[in-house]
Image 1: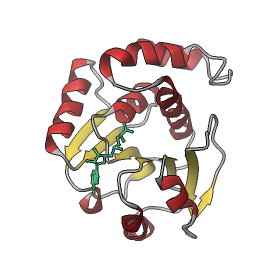
Image 2 (image 1 turned 30 degrees about the horizontal axis):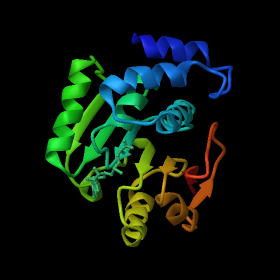
Image 3 (image 1 turned 30 degrees about the vertical axis):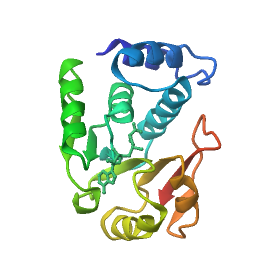
Length: 186
Ligand SMILES: C[S@@+](CC[C@H](N)C(=O)[O-])C[C@H]1O[C@@H](n2cnc3c(N)ncnc32)[C@H](O)[C@@H]1O
């Protein structure tokens, strides 16, 4: 098991601020990801949130970029992680990072999240991959395809778009900030 996962297991009773996991992840991340400490904290919060979901299934990073969140979540959460990224070069970089660091639970696919089967997802990580005007259509897809109880961890602008959707209800999560929110599909 990866060193970070062991650290994570040892700090589950502490708050994120008290724990050394954020510092460690950031130190580790500085070699892998170009993320700030705050972003790392959000990734830790998301990983914890996804570790305690009611449904069986994988975690999808919708619009995974170069994989900072997908790699961090895969390191810290026992669930399989599917990183979906429209730009093929970015998806390839995620695959290369996963291979380099031996993260077997992470699969990166190059493609459009609107065309990806998400019926097996128990949780979705969404760091504002879409413009606001695209969010209702994506929510239509989730409502059609995903099971009630599917969890969403939202980051940045998409938080307010999702907060307006009547098919989602807010759920508690540790370490939420003004720019992060957690939801469940009704
Ligand atoms: C803000 S970045 C998110 C990065 C990553 N989730 C993270 O937090 O580390 C948004 C990404 O979503 C991708 N994206 C936009 N529309 C998409 C779509 N329809 N399907 C898949 N990826 C998409 C963009 O190419 C971009 O890389």
